[in-house]
Length: 109
Image 1 (spheres, rainbow, N blue to C red):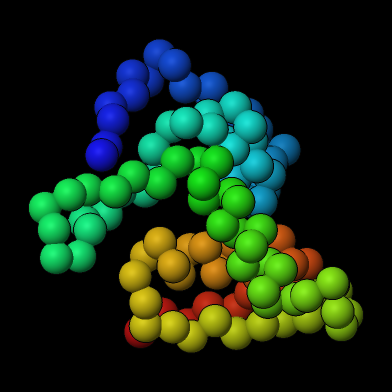
Image 2: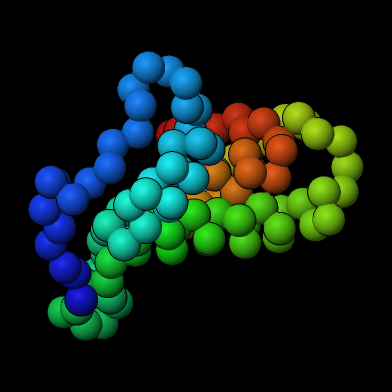
């Protein structure tokens, strides 16, 4: 089920360039944890599923653990991400690579 959220309840991150993408995801997980970040259709159903900022942040960390278990290997290695997937999975893996301490290089076709 998708719930609406009024923008007056949102805590906006600073827009002065002090936060990069990982920090923005973390900020929203901490300050807007229950706010909907993604919405998608449940397959074979008319139901909509919502993913909160907190859910997305936790999923990114799970992806980071799967990508680089126990911080194996060198930091800042370049990883190419070539995928044919839905937006939610792609963004989760993209951020997981970054949270794993690696550099992501994407190719969009």
